[in-house]
Image 1: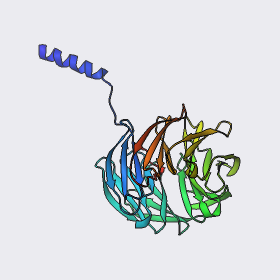
Image 2: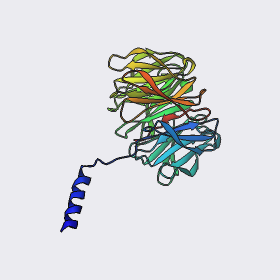
Image 3: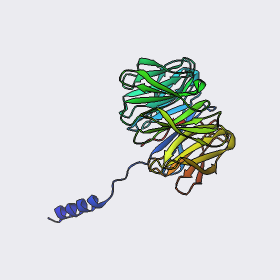
Image 4: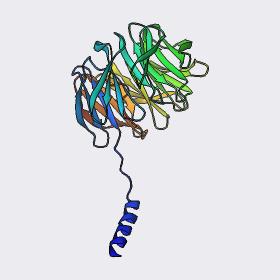
Length: 317
């Protein structure tokens, strides 16, 4: 009787104990080191460093967080990282200019932009086979997929344009001119706006996705490279490569709020799932700056590796 009562009490206590889940990890490609740093966002430190040959650049974490896809331009494709075992399980040959990479919201398809071939490869995430290619503009770079998995948006750097691709038909339905040399893209949670960092015009174009028309152009600082949304999509943060800063745009009024100093040559930028903290890969410093998007201050700087780039959605959910 006493033993049964003990286990009954223990069970009632366990019911009250909250379930502890692992914090999201950030996967930072260190292009000059040929490595990827695994950053534990809860501990605020690098917990593993994984060799990845081929000058890793673009990063895309699968929706379930179990895989991370890393583009390898010098290897002509991408590597597949098992995030639980923390080792590379496969390398996939796509084309010589593989750079931008993104995963569909359902995790079934990987899209890889080819800088030289002017195409986007469609890769089946299960078989890792290239199942199609979509012709886009010159030097495609940044990629984002709409939340409803209907549309793929592609920044065509040398054409100064963004293309909207019908995913089901694998065809471009419209291409619109933006600023000079667009590179990084971000899309809001409603799929209504796409933001593009225009490297050589030092501004951000805001696109209405339904009409594929520019609704605003916001001036930032020197050589904007990549963008991310935070604070329930109310703020857009933009890395400025030649300014060592991150510009902040209020998306409600589409005006710049100012800039935050980070490391030298900031490139990749991504938001934590909590919507408040933003991580910035600083190429020249080999560090990651952590920004509080509410207070607009840097709250931590973490050493990663040489040539930290992390172009894409490098933080898991």
